Amino acid sequence: MAEISLFEKIEGNWKKVRVVVGLRNFHLTNLYELLQKSLYEHNYCRASEILEVLLQCPDCDLSRIWQPAIEVLFTLDPTSTAFIEFFNILLLKNHTLSSKIILDKQRIILELVFYQMKYGNATDALATAETYLPMEPYCNNPVLHGYTGLLAYSLWEQLNIMIKENESKHKIYKPPKHEQFMDRQKRYYEMSLSNFKRSLDLDMSNDMFLMYCVKLLLHNEEIEEAITVMQNFCDKNPSVLTGHRLLFEVLRTYKSFDSKWVEVGKTYHRIDPVSPPEIVFNPLIEHYTQVIKRTSEEEREILADAYYNICELLFQRIEYGDDNTNYLFKTLQSFIWLELIKIGELLKNRGEWFRQYLIHTQRKVVNSWWELQCYKILSACVSNSEPIFGTMGELAERAREFVLVGNHFRNDRTFFDFVRQSRKNNCINVSRLSDSGSVNSGNGLSNVE
Image (cartoon, rainbow, N blue to C red; front, side, top):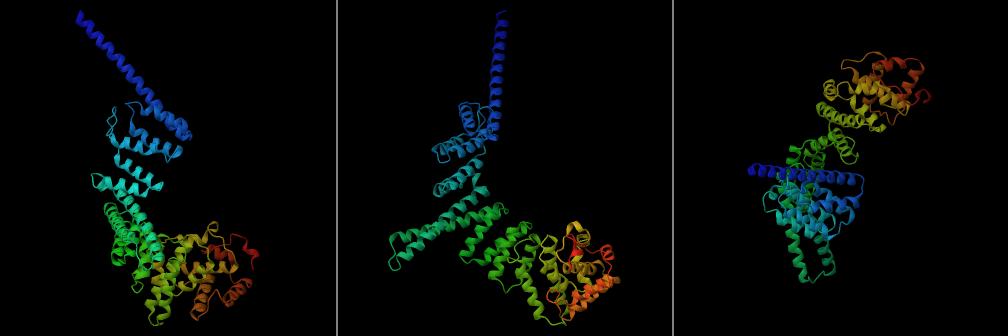
């Protein structure tokens, strides 16, 4: 009987413990939710008080509160020593007592380094990174290597400025500190470059680290290695613009005699057809224009290829909404030089896009009567691979003859005077033109003469 009563007593105590534990977990859950609500409402004072309560609880799950705690500290007092103390507490803890969830110390280290970087403590941040980088698993963290490279790069740049100032002040006599500056400069350069390379070896996807790595290599005139690094990046990240842009700029600057910069530039423009024209579009157009000038009329294949590439670039600008009228005139002038096989190659990946672009009035608003006629002629040229018949076909053939004798649409009104006269004589039926695949005006062209 005594044994039974003892068992019942133990069972009763266990139930009480379960109730207490359940109640504690219930309160913790409520505090977690209230903390998130406070952050959402930007009530950082209340969030700070909640965090103080949670941090005193041994069952608190630090993995759930350390990032909110950092947000609160950032907002209330980012320069406080409590910030570093909190990071030290996190790094000393392996897990929380209740859930045994292992803290992600790599993320904590990155947050600490980022905090020190943000508030100008580059030397302290570099010391923090150097402390952990030799150890597992930090040595295989590409972002930590990249941050270390950025910190060393920043300190290297600061030393460059200091050395230049010293050299300007002491042109003959070099103070003892000058040699120390030179040694530190070399150390930071090598540290920065090696960490950027290591970061890219581990994860060839961070274009920011690529940019700094290329800057350092070019500073030391290691052109071939810089090109190799950029080419590897482009091969592994064909859709990332930064790699193609850097490779294009370096090749055009240091390897302008090699036509490789042209192919890289075409890829760059294909990815970013709305980039400022002076960066890649104008240099490519100028290149192919010079090819045309240097090529005799007998070398038709070379000419056709040059005109094809010009049209390809112009089409890309027009496709993505660049309404520069000069592009339209130049497209028409270049387009009618192409052989039929080149026309098919130019349009094979575009399907019905261009004709739809010209047909649907809501897609295009033309600003002048001349511009409308150019779109109509270009539509007629695009619409058929066989010889074009009908009114628009005759207009396209006349345009071809007009250009082949050396005239230019932009500078010569003769051709458009012919179009205008044909329109007045009812030789060109505007409704028929619209039905056959040409554009209409989106802004009242009937009033534009």
